[in-house]
Image 1 (cartoon, rainbow, N blue to C red):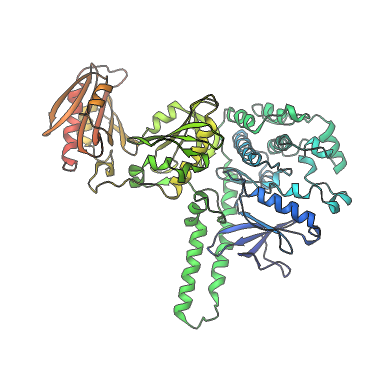
Image 2 (cartoon, one colour; image 1 turned 60 degrees about the vertical axis):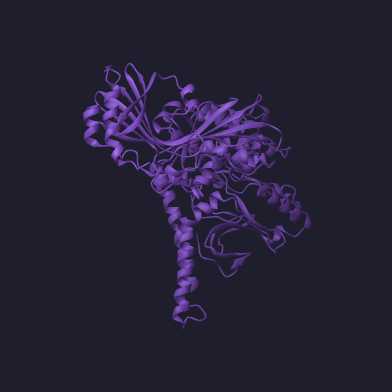
Length: 629
């Protein structure tokens, strides 16, 4: 970025301009800052392109349409002024290098980076095409790289210029010839398939270092796009069929964004950028912070009433608060609130829950309309079951979908059940079971803070594919958890507040399970302990009362009885080589209670009796540490 020049505006709308990001044939892109410190990228159109009312009308229509594009892989439009002398459009500022810059600096991407690029571009097109827009100018310089994936910028503007008389009269090509589709090169009507062709050229460039249609002149490039079969031999084998399919001359033969996403997700590679790319992303973020810091400090260096030290200190505090917003406090608001007009110089905030937050999450409030409202209207009551909750929704087009949130499932079990889909959600790989199914579940595993699984299931009551609904619902849930996680109100001495691993007694574990008795936090309310001879799942949670008739009828685990341990009545369900102990600490609501649950089982090669005696020893060591009921 460069400092503002004498001809550059100091302010556009409610944004103060800080620096020049770049200049081009259409206009210039400026770094702007809102009054609360958040940064935006402001594209200001050149005056000589805005002389006709027709252009302004087209620009206005496209700007309005662009504001409907949302999603983790696009830079959302947050503000626009089509009536200004030089119309401008503000979007989220993405602090990441362009793909073109990365390939020029570091060379082609390896397969892992290509997979992340392909899945991110597919997700971006799904969101753009959902609004009825065709990007029309997809190219490496319009793809910015962030830690969790690519972000597509500049959608919608090329379409506003398509019929501009001044541009076509001078022979200007709208778009970038080396990344155009054949139908775009010959000025034919465009469909969403045109963007898929551009994605194919971008992937080929990222894999080889050059567009597959490169030439020494624009006419030669356009000829290559129209008539030559591209050489994709330099594209890694697993990705080559995907690229070849995207580069089909016939638009009908190209995959849809959903098919592209599925094909990219099937590539056997971990989706991630190389280390050098991640370092460059960090440098770009640091640069944005430096500009924001300089602007915040400059705003208070010499205020009009600087002779008043109290006023001067007050303004410095405001500057520090604005900078704090840029550095992260505002990140959660920008990403998760759904409020137009907030942008930050960073990608989506990582989901990082504190131990207290993770243990007190209210799953049912994650299914309410303020979280899932964009998916439809609830048509049934919430059904809660401990750390799980379910509800039925009806979508705007009349589809009936049931959603379920699962928060208490172990991380290990989630890893075993699901595989990676090839996409990311809020810095977390998106996990799933089926690509297309009437009952579909998606999950993420937190990468920061408490290790936990967040799972969402979508169940179509009639024929249909529940996977898109599961992904959209999980995205909404993660946004809410990142911004303002809904917490239950529980007593100060509730067992739900306790760390399940910390309450266990080390000596008793070694004696009952055998050395090494290794502990692992399996969920916010669960601890898994693995010994030489035995294993144990230990949980402190809210669940159906162990003495309820409904639970007794539902359970079929084994012989049911009670046992006095440490002066408390413990419910026992015993199998020949396994034991389940449940202690009710206190009733809560309905037939629910706070419980302590132990599941003790032998190691695979150590089948032996005596599970309940060992489980009783563990329970006996835990009871004195529990709150009095």
